[in-house]
Length: 466
Ligand SMILES: [Zn+2]
Image (tube, rainbow, N blue to C red; front, side, top):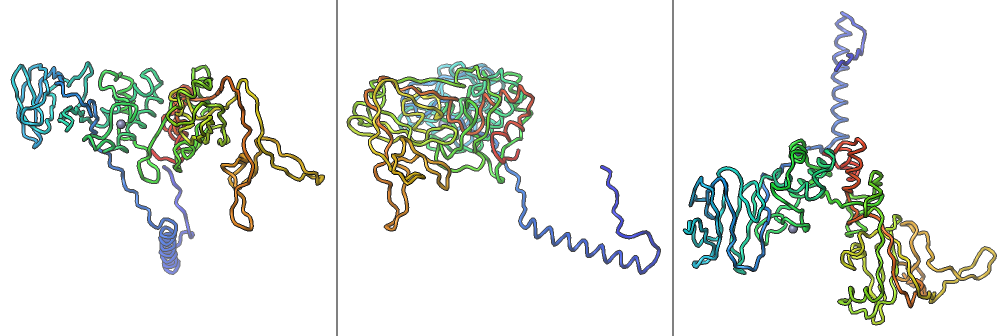
């Protein structure tokens, strides 16, 4: 880089000028030093240290005490819980784990018990991989026996090898390269951020949607391996700490603030647009219909009796429902935040929907009266809103209180109109999933439009560094 030197003074051979020049330089250095202390008082960049390996639960919390068999096509070395080697072969073998008469587990190869009565055993392939139920896994297996008599099979695997087994299951192997890379960073961050999530069972993450779906080697493709390797040391941080890069399938146009889904404010999980999603995909927009009788069955555990009405009583400016009231002939219940999506099981694809009702008659049970500009008393129309310090809010009994001379009081008599005799509730929504953080359909669209994985991640996660 070419930088022009800054001249403070014209060149001179005068000793006096030289000494003034040196004094000026010293003064400038002191000023710059003082400014750096003033403006950057405690800047210490501490490098994030990623974990070496993850323990992924493959079979766990199994109450079955049936033996488990897996294969080692390139041979295996077995270690006991103290780390001592107990067995080694380079032959292709099947290993059966069974209940030990001594407690713990026995490992049986070719009809012979090669390790007996130990609490846990580690199996490391000598070459090739270990395979269980038709799936090959990188890394080693740890097998232990649970107090329920079932077995745990845990795959101890390098974190990037884990990520290679996750990406296809989560976003699809045929996604464009930059979307695969973005998903790889999400998967890596997730694994690193959830060490010991399932410590009760002796591992970090499980292999289902509860954590991330992990398919071992079978789901790897050359494109996925390239994407994982190209980002192999990349972690997303917020204020120097590992960010929890949650993602969902699609959003239908914009993501939602985490606080309206899970209730906690997360500075990097804020609403952003998702303009590049394919509008022809099935969940970009969707409709879910449910009759009162079906709703009654699905919600029977809440003791509401026969469901007669459903009302959206609070929503974000992006039509994401945050409070949904369900009224039955035996009671009513307000579902909040993520429960506004999950209350009917898999019926509602996201929290972003509007609700219309077929059949029935609507009654407005009470009215707020207001004085208009001509000093005439008028009934306020149904579903009124008021402007508050948090923006426009629906004026309903559950959310609005006013400060009076006797303290804070609820506004009396304000309630949402009730509909009875409904034949069908029709929800029209957008997106699939919790809508927070990266949209996978949005990432695919952005990658096709030429954005890099860094662009994609920084778009969906506000303020992160990579
Ligand atoms: Zn899990």
